[in-house]
Image (cartoon, rainbow over all chains, first blue to last red; front, top):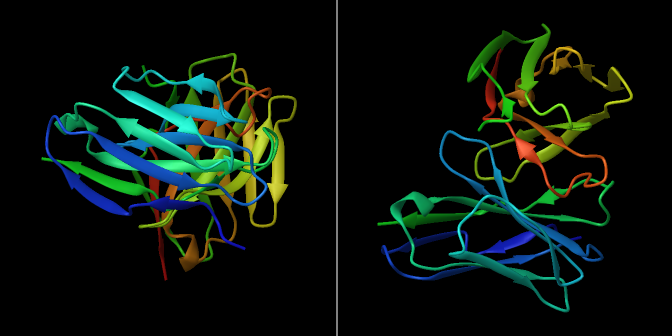
Amino acid sequence: DAGVTQSPTHLIKTRGQHVTLRCSPISGHKSVSWYQQVLGQGPQFIFQYYEKEERGRGNFPDRFSARQFPNYSSELNVNALLLGDSALYLCASTYSPNTEAFFGQGTRLTVV
Amino acid sequence: DQQVKQNSPSLSVQEGRISILNCDYTNSMFDYFLWYKKYPAEGPTFLISISSIKDKNEDGRFTVFLNKSAKHLSLHIVPSQPGDSAVYFCAASFINFGNEKLTFGTGTRLTIIP
């Protein structure tokens, strides 16, 4: 069975640009959460989506947005990129709140 | 505002000995705690969890202890094996949110010395 898949694995963007990161959850999982992990820190919660609805949002500016599609895959969008947005972006999917969260391998974003 | 703290960035332990990783939290409303393990170039992998109604949970070589009054939890690995070398993250949540909105610590890099 495929795990959580994220694309792309790496990308480099210039300050001010826009980026879209993609996540496909494990089959049957309807909840997707996004995290940002800056070097030397733990993952920080950005968004959680369930059945295409936003269920939670962390302390991130409005430049960050996300959505979930009918097939439960998800996109994370970041506008007007800043150098500080350079990080590993992780996606996690769960079948239900009380079951294990499975993480993808992440997308490494570098903003130059 | 770091609500979950892991004050030891690194820890080295001899193979076969006990590894003890520590974690402190400041938000007394947290009632569900987890440990994740992360290898390079991989996402975090769930290890073990504990709810605030318990003070201990065991799963094979891994045991998590929770001291609510001290807002402290620890992960014990016995015996430590070379494959345990990884970064370990402590995470906290609320039981209603379960595994979906986690607050992570900064991580402890564990190195098992053969």
